[in-house]
Length: 172
Image (tube, rainbow, N blue to C red; front, side, top):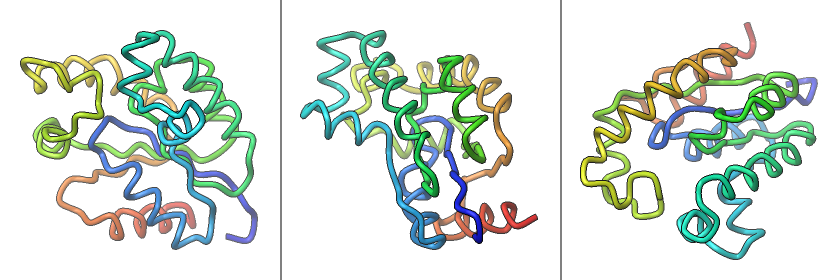
């Protein structure tokens, strides 16, 4: 990439944003950030604890500030949290400051990839994680599609293969 532009990965939890983002950044020699990880690093607490203490609204405020700050960088790959697109400000910043890649996955894959992960507060304590994921998808999928420059299906594909598809589409 001659010019250093930003690549922002959006999509639901379990779509592979962090794994694919690391691979993509490595392939393109760009710096990788994960907005959730940066929030944890700066607060010194995990996302579940922030949710517990401040509620989803408090977490979303932190997330909005973090995404605002991170998207001011140049030449980065950023994996965003699944709910980051709920904020109009986040959607506007992501759209204006880089190429937005929607990593799409089906509910079955999400359930399989997230079932043992206790660090996801929206489903960690859910009686029916599948129902929660379906409800989230109904609200969020149209928002992902609204700002996506590129849409890639991640089901049945390795992170390297998805990263290569993104690179291919960026070149077009």
